[in-house]
Figure 1 (cartoon, rainbow, N blue to C red):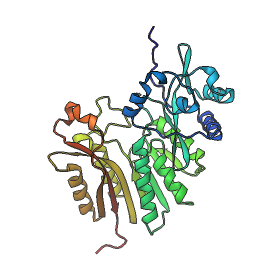
Figure 2 (cartoon, helix red, strand yellow; figure 1 turned 90 degrees about the horizontal axis):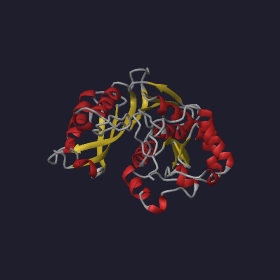
Figure 3 (cartoon, rainbow, N blue to C red; figure 1 turned 30 degrees about the horizontal axis):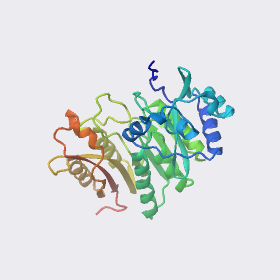
Figure 4 (spheres, rainbow, N blue to C red; figure 1 turned 180 degrees about the vertical axis):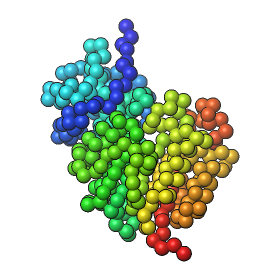
Length: 324
């Protein structure tokens, strides 16, 4: 008999219960490094991994489990949070908890198939590393910062931890992401961050000393919010972020944009577009490939037929303190 796998549920709506669950999990010493969906699928397909045997299997690998595997207080919190589903004789978690920057972050369970899934993976860690590196290198203080399309909130929370007293705003259009970001901010002790609904920067006002973003950059036929960038080869949203940020940077303020670029016949159309944008806006900028070849499996799809590789890139654009 084949056991059915339920469709991934949205990120739980009971934020207090999710926060209590994550804190209880942290007390056990839990840690987990979340891998790519492709790696996750390979590892979980091994016959010995059909059923969870540890808390990491449940909350990291999203494997079905027997009720007696999880300590009763944690199972009770899972039920209170709406973070577990019946799956035949087993139970299945509906959220994952991952480690980053010494913190735990709650996000959607594997597979992140729902249109409003809250994604967290290796790109999240790369994005956070780029943000942290910028903060360590900059000489000017951050008084006001925003994380555009915050998802789990990881980028903005990394900023808030390193800029105490700054106003840090996390914005997204996905209600599930906003719930996750609020939970994760409190879990990290950065309760003062302001989580708001905003379509890019359209619903927040004023200039910023730091704008960070890891927007979707893929061509996703399902158009999932966390993945689909739209526009030419998925560059629509990254270009929109750069354009809006260019008009909202305070003097000395910087944009750190971590995204992907589709390379066609050795050329990088995204780099050309942001170079022109930054030059027109009078911004100083640097652009580098963080990883020259990522998501190679996507090249088998018709949408990427003309693409030879997908690179992960970091654009840093800064408004000069004084203009000529």
